[in-house]
Structures are given as C-alpha cells and as structure tokens.
Length: 225
Image (cartoon, rainbow, N blue to C red):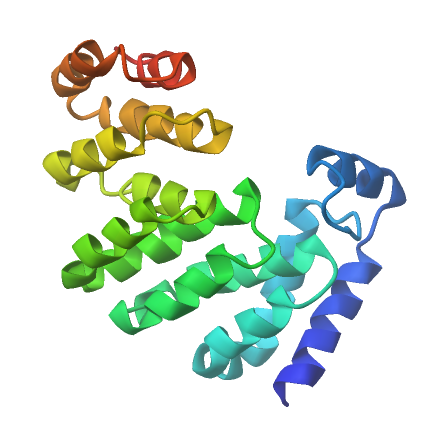
C-alpha cells in the first residue's frame, strides 16, 4: 500500500456512492466553488469505515500526508474524507502541526472546511502548545486572510468552561470593525457558544461593545442570553 494507491481507492469508493441528484444540490450549496461526486455524509462514513478497517495502521502512520493528498483532489468529498481521518487521528495532533493546520486552512478555503479545522485541528494544536497562541493569533489578526482570522476567533469553541475568557474577548475586540460576513458571523458564534457557560460575561461584553459590533455579531451572540 502507498498513498497514491490509497487515495485512488478512496476516490473510487466515493464515486461508487455518487448520486447525481445530490451532486447538483451540493455544488449549489457551496456556491459552485467545488466539484462534488454527490455523496452524502452517511455514505461517506460507510466508505470511511471500510477503508479504516482495512488500512487503519497505514492511515494512522501517514494521516498527515494522506490528508495533504486528499486535499489536492478535485472533489470536495475528498476533503471531507480527510477531515474524518483527522478526527480519528486527533490524539496524534500536537504543536508541531501548526504549519499543517495553516496549510489546510488556506488551501481551498471555505466555511465547510475552515470551521472543522479550526475547532478539531486548531483547538487541539493550541491546547497541546499554548505557547503558540499569542504569536499565532496576533499574526492572524494582523493579516488579511479572513480564514486565519476566523481560526483565531473560533479555535476555542470546543473548550467549554475551560475557554480562556480574557483571550477570547481580546481577540473578538480586535476582530471588530469589518464588514466581512465570515468574521462577524464567527464573532457572534464564539459569543453564543461561550454564553452557554458564562452568560453574564457575554451579556456584559455585548453591552460594552455594541456600538463597535456588527448587528450580525450581536444577533448571533445574543441567541442564548
């Protein structure tokens, strides 16, 4: 087994599950940016189970390179398959994966991959290497890549009560003042998620910064409070 052969097998298995009626809808939902086979999540997960059962050890040993190969494939289901692999190999993720994370976030970026990567890969990278948080988020916020800014905003989404409130609020304040939908939506999403654990802090934050925040951010962030 080698990576090229495995990637070919994955593509062939996905193509066998393709449904023409699903394909058009999936392409349209992603604003015609990506090609699709037309494979919905349950069928993709079925392919994953079969591939994982047969090649588990090889995948675990090579999941980063396999992910990079799948990211080069034309069909979006291959990127989704790669994300499924990342989730299965999450215990192997560490601070050394920061370049891996940034590469995936900025390659064929759209919310469907960026949100998963930010939470499941980014959240794990920064949890394992907290010394990276300040220099990396500072760099993202100082740059103009909206997807890296979104990463800085939402990487803590799965942290729950362990969310670093001061860091989160600092990042949100520094992200305001834009008309960019995906940034303002992320600000609201981060606040909404954190309000499950600290509604008073979120309520106070919104009240303090409401004149600086986009209406979208306020609306999203206030849903649970």
